[in-house]
Image 1 (cartoon, rainbow over the protein chains, first blue to last red):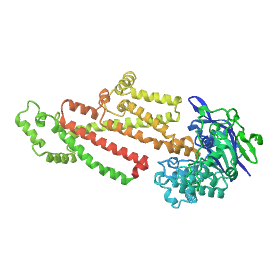
Image 2 (cartoon, helix red, strand yellow):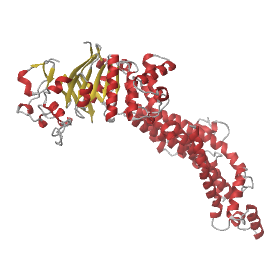
Image 3 (spheres, chains in turn cyan, yellow):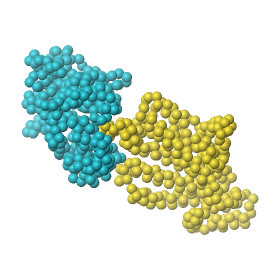
Image 4 (cartoon, rainbow over the protein chains, first blue to last red):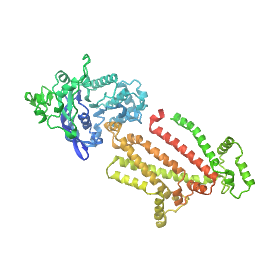
Length: 328
Length: 306
């Protein structure tokens, strides 16, 4: 399978009162062409920062990539000059954000916002870009596409706006689409529609999708592979089938147990005890140790490495003697 | 858009009526007999009676008000007590210099202020920002009469380049408009900066960057329009004040504007002139407010649809 994106040992930090505070600690993963890869984790685990790092959109946060490589189609994006990177954004890699309500500019018509990247990247005239935009809107299931072009974002519903965001993101036929919690802000019924739509688009165009989410339901629905992140680290990396059939990391098990199940009666819903550790005060050893049901002595002293067995990697001392170390 | 404007204009009619009524009452609120006040202390009873009749003061109040409205509509603002000249003529002489000075001052203040604000916001916490905001703080802190005096000293007395005062030719507008605009420019720069800094943090700006847009497209295509509402608010207010003329700057530059006419008329109790000027200022403010509202609706489509 053709490798689209390879992230190697990515470290991203924020500047906080002059000090660098690392939030993504050397994560590695890849996305192949035509594959949907999920990144799952609680808020604050670094999954959004990872996606912004790939897009190199950190300067507003203000964060910076301090180490690692982001190889897209053989090109290391971390070394690319900003001018070059601009040509990639929206054309090669594009992104959908969590908040459809605030991610569209409230004072510009939908048409203008859609045409913008089409004119910029595909070098079409205004008229051609207009027609292209209408076709894209139709392809994301918007029936009155040409009317919509002259409307403003506040005239649309949340689901409609997210469709417009998707249309905007795919308008220049990118090879990689990064979706940062694309359905979190939407109603459940609309969520399913948007997920189906994304899956449809992916199958038609064979692009790779990196799906950032906290929702295992979304992962089960659309992803081929999944990466579980905790406190800025990858703790588990496997196919979706393997992850749900035999989760390894106690954190992943906890996440799966915390999903409500039909037929579980009026049992209290499981939740993982404790909270995510504060980046200012990270424990040594395994970062999950304090919340783990299977905690051992070594867990609080030393951090385990990410070990792989038959394509299923896990960062946990429980499996250490059975597995070989992965070199990524 | 047009629908919105027509709605707003129609909505002004009651406001104008109320304002004109309050100003009409002005002459009746002066303690004592207005006719006696206008005629002066030495006037005989007959003279006072004559003034009372000519002003229609013996008629019922609401009839007087309608007479007042009628004469307003025909452009008759009464006669100056001081000179006996029609008030409309007195104001007419002064209104063009004041308008010229206002547009010049607000014009340069807007252009320079917005530009300075953009530069400061884009380079926030770097030296262009510090320089820009230093300029802004100076503009706000230096009193305009002092700026005026320094300008006269430099450009008129020392260099002999510009006239010290009056309103003859465009040269005589330069220094007063600089003195008047400096503070407004500074305010606009600060408002533009803070509003733009805030806008640049919004999600849709990140969307724009994710599309591959460059810095200029982000600032001018996406951020600026979203940032201008507070700027328009403050510029509108200042515009309204300037239209009333500035007493201090007009005095420093012996500029024949509406501000000095008002002060002079108040000092000699030339009530018809004062009354007409207050009416003029009120109407100007109402119009400026309307203008500001229309610009709002242009900047933010949501306002248009509410």
